[in-house]
Image (cartoon, rainbow, N blue to C red):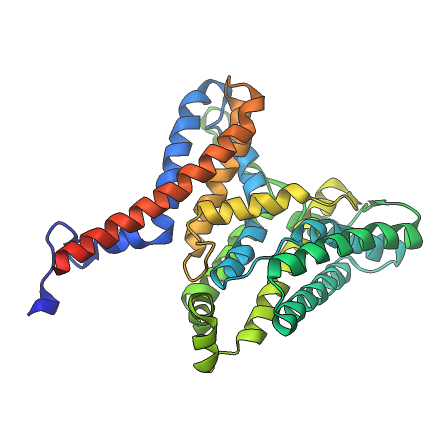
Length: 358
């Protein structure tokens, strides 16, 4: 009888408010709604809510989001990869040199870029699993090694650190690096569904769906959570923790390279400049999305909400009358408030659950 009793205020028709509050994405979703309403109000007169205005922060969020989801996987598993800042330009210059310098087909160049990134991710994973050196230190070293190789190899093979990537073909440009709009009707009956969304946005959607399946449907997801909760117990239970960890590092590396390739195709150029800012951006998105730094807790949906929220804060200030110098202040406040909100939701749910059991 005790098992069948439900608190009327917390469970209705099988829906549990307490369970909802425990979800990592609850705080992230609430934060996204509040931030969206805030900038929607203050940016109303500057077209924040228009299709073109929305594309500004959605395009930014998509590039961060493609990397943030694998970083979220690693953080759930109790690891971290900060080498992505160097792998973004690595993906772009490998693609550009493959096509322009070696005359490869664009898609073969993409494959080469992903293979190179996968190899770097494999090295990261092997070093972490075989040496037991913290992943932060390993990937910090890899960050500077790859950054140095980007510049050195570029100069040795092409004589420059700036690479042109012209005429990749209409289909390749459409898929990897173009602006897309969808308008229904014409003249006064015209309805704009979306406008000037980059290809990276649609890649992000497909990638997020695949990652949702991996983490929340496939058995690999349980392995990732188990590894972040207690790696030793997970290993004793027969989970291939080392192989799984290596695979996660390879996934984050290839995601970063993919972003670099989409940027190269979109801009028709690739540079060796290391994107240090992207390292912090992805971590912020994951933390805002409710993933615990201690591991074992997080969702793909939460990371998506965190990325969207960060995209609005990062780009939304341009649609308001606020001083642009306050941008970093908003980001810092967002990170702190998001963490506090996520902790508050979990603590409220835990307290209420404990009280009910008594």
